[in-house]
Each structure stands twice: as structure tokens, then as C-alpha cells.
Picture 1 (cartoon, rainbow, N blue to C red):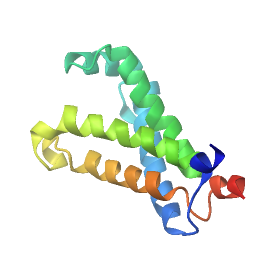
Picture 2 (tube, rainbow, N blue to C red):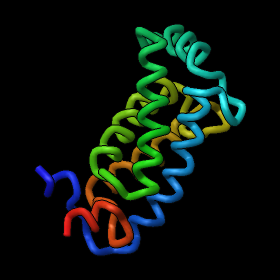
Picture 3 (cartoon, rainbow, N blue to C red):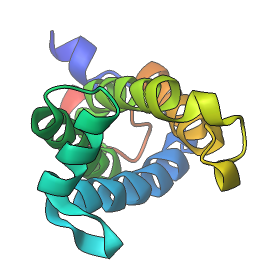
Picture 4 (tube, helix red, strand yellow):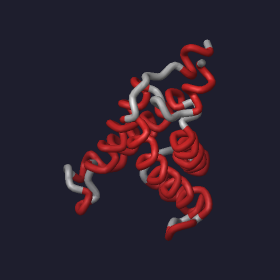
Length: 141
């Protein structure tokens, strides 16, 4: 079990993905959970999610916000990178298909290019692990 959770490769490349994606995910999670950075907060985000059919809205908003916020922290630390990335990939899959797909590719039209990019980064980290400069690597040793 420990091998599955902490196994990673010896590359430095995941560090770049982890740091950039972690910052973005933390900010988006904070918007949903706390209303920071111009976000709507948990109640309003839950109401919006319910209005687009993601029920129960409050629970879905909490789950998405928590995955993004705490998953982003995990990515930055390189701690439990694979499970965090899996949760984030699933969150971005739902966002891509349920929220953005019908709007086309471009984010300027509410499209899926940004959520698809975050899905790809999350999937890559799920496959590679946190890399050389991660807490996972230290714990696996």
C-alpha cells in the first residue's frame, strides 16, 4: 500500500507541474470554499451547482472545493501526489464534461480548454508521482 501511495520517479519535471497546478487549484478551491479571490463561497457555489444539475449542490461544491484546495496543497508539497492528482483529475473531468463541454474549446466562451489542461496535468502527475523533489520520494525511501 505504501508503494502505491508514495511511489514516484526520479525526475525534476513533476515539480514544475506540481507547483503551477497546485497554486491554481488552491486558488480555485479557495474561491469555492471561502469566497476568496473574487469567488462566491460555498453557499452560492452550491446553489449554482444545483442549478446546473449537480445535486446536492452544497455537497458537490464542498467536494469540488475541498479537492481543489487540499489537493493543491498536496501537490505543492508533493505529499500523496498520486491520490491527490486522481481526485483532481476526476474533479476536472466532471468540470470539463458537465460544465464546459457544451461551450466549445475556448475559455473566453466558457469552454473546456482550461479544465482539460488541468485534467491533463493531474493525469500526468497521477502517472508519474511527485518526482525527485517531493515528500513522497522522501517517505518512499
